Image 1 (cartoon, rainbow, N blue to C red):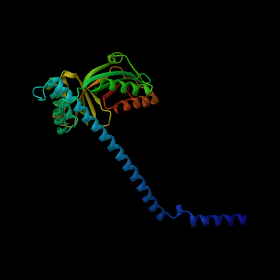
Image 2 (cartoon, helix red, strand yellow):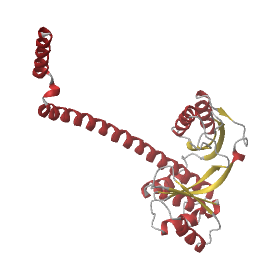
Image 3 (cartoon, rainbow, N blue to C red):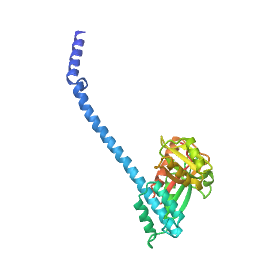
Image 4 (cartoon, rainbow, N blue to C red):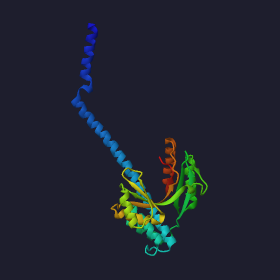
Length: 279
């Protein structure tokens, strides 16, 4: 028994002498510095990754509206928005999506140059996994390239290109106003009635603290003006396909479908991808 107690005492004394956990003031200061540096490094990496994604999204948006402006000028036959209604509408959408005025003016100038190609819109329909469907909106000056890229991207990820019309009938075309704030439905209703807007649907946005307003396509600009007059200058508008019957996929299928969508959105010729997943 004495030998056991003596050994235990010796082991304890060695633990006290050598264990950094018992030297609390020095250890806490050292660990705080090390942990702080680690988290600072991670935070910097997260900020850098977030900024990179934001910059890429902004560049894609600017390029997209550049193409839309060129197409509107060429199809409308005039670089003057006062004489070209389609161009005026695209410019309004571009500004609502924070496209710089310089970019807009450059696109208008490019459209008048003989060497600038003609852009055209097209739509592809596809099936994902777990009952998901997709509408792929394309704006390109090379239809063959766009078609090949879209089909390859979908097929490589176990999706399937659908026949024209087999997916589209499950969606309604709507005007969509994205608002970075929570809207009061009664206040919005009063403003909409005053603007002679017949009907709208208000929903929570994809991100917390945001709202989405859906209206008939012909009333999109009017509702956009209503929302801006309510003080929401950062609102954005576009036309969108809204699913009549959303489906909830399994987590695994959802992730795989999102991989298809993200890969499609990375293509230069793809404008946007819409889907019917509710989760």
